[in-house]
Image (tube, rainbow over all chains, first blue to last red; front, side, top):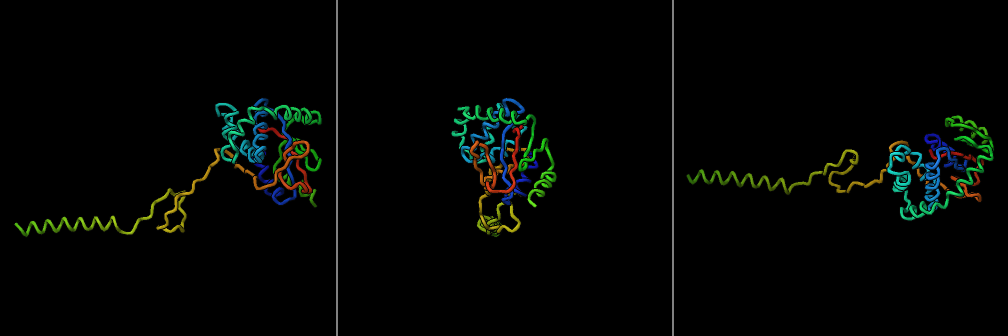
Length: 142
Length: 96
């Protein structure tokens, strides 16, 4: 979704035709949980999607950071997140249980791999090109 | 001998005057790094270069999307865009 999501946003979300709902999955263990937790903490300051974009945009940088948590904190610097509040949120670990519960809920709903998408309930398994998503969306809007 | 002194003295005075006129002449435009120079910028305008926070990202483009509405569903899922949009795109995804 690194390349496709911005195109979907420009074409359909900014134009008011579509909304995107994010439901996290954790395929890479603790790093995934930390990243999702960081996005939730940024979300407390109204920067969830900015943090999400920042994480997607520099995954290599995250893995080269001293720790994943340090790398995630560094990602917040350019998106307007208050660092102290973010750090407190991360240390609280308060989103871990809800996120893991959500993961279990998704698995129970048959979502066992990633990425998975649903467009008005139509499930799509695996990554797709923008044009493929666009075909489905255009079909649904006409 | 006195004529020679007068000539040498005059020569030094000429040099001093020319140096002074260079220092007090029209200010030269400061050469900014090429990335910050605008083609139509006035050479006499002294505007400090804008400091831009450059994302540390090395790949991809950071699209902050802060300009778009972002809300939570009752279940706690983050939603980007118009809640009344006719298309709902659910993204089950990992961050990595």
